Structure formats: C-alpha cells, structure tokens
Image (cartoon, rainbow, N blue to C red; front, side, top):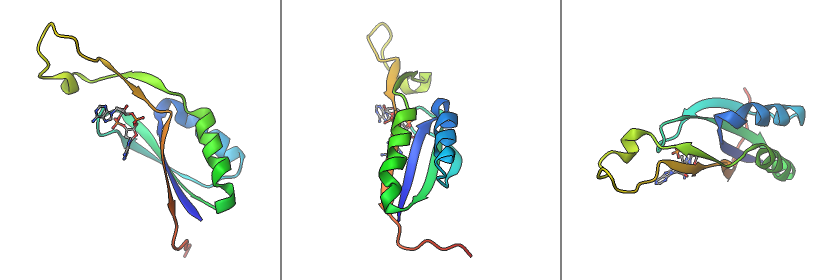
Length: 107
Ligand code: 2BA
C-alpha cells in the first residue's frame, strides 16, 4: 500500500474528488494553506493499494490544471518601486508525494 498526499488547487478540488469517488477511491480532504502564496489549497490523503496508484495519479493529473496565480503584496514587499518584478506565479497542476505505508490499521 502507498500513501498519496496530493496538494491540489482549490479550484480543481471538487472535480478531482468527484472523479476519485466515482472510481471508489477512499480519501480524506483537508483544507490547507500554501506556505508561499498563503492561499487556500486542498490536500488529499489517500491510502491506495499498489496496483491502483497509477490510476489514482492519472485521475489527479487529468483534473488538475496549471494556472497563473497572483502573488500577494507581502511577497513583493521590499522590491524597489518602478523596477520590474513578477506579479504572478505558475501554480500546479498538483504537488504529489507517494510514500510507502508500513501498516494500515482500522480499530
Ligand atoms: P504555495 O507554497 O503557496 O506555492 C504556490 C506556488 O508558488 C508554487 O506552486 C510555486 O510555483 C511558487 N513558489 C513556491 N515557493 C516559492 C519560492 N520560494 N519562490 C518562488 N516561487 C515559489 P506549486 O509548486 O505548484 O505548489 C503548489 C502548492 O503545493 C504550494 O503552495 C504548497 O502548498 C504545496 N507544495 C509545493 N511544493 C511543496 C513541497 N516541497 N512540500 C510541501 N508542500 C509543497
């Protein structure tokens, strides 16, 4: 078994969750906040049998889009006025960690 931890854009979360539920994947959805943009995102925790990991990743990939997000003023603070600086940053599709599960216990 593997634990898939998937951080997804909140705009994609509904679609991803619907598609995962449709394929009978079990998951826990958490409201989280990105450390850089300090914007809300969604983190999914999924315990997945080894032979289903690729299917789960394909669903996440299919429903998570890359998009430009505005940088909050505080991130740009300190940049000299009138100089060029980035106001948007590329986010996503999804940031995914796949880790081995040593034990899976329900009690
Ligand atoms: P945030 O930390 O809010 O980051 C949003 C986007 O800002 C990132 O998109 C990346 O394009 C950019 N970014 C992040 N840190 C940066 C930095 N120090 N300098 C310049 N640009 C930076 P993604 O890479 O797609 O990440 C989306 C969200 O996934 C992140 O939101 C964070 O919540 C999570 N994440 C990404 N990498 C992670 C990691 N190594 N560990 C834990 N969470 C991670």
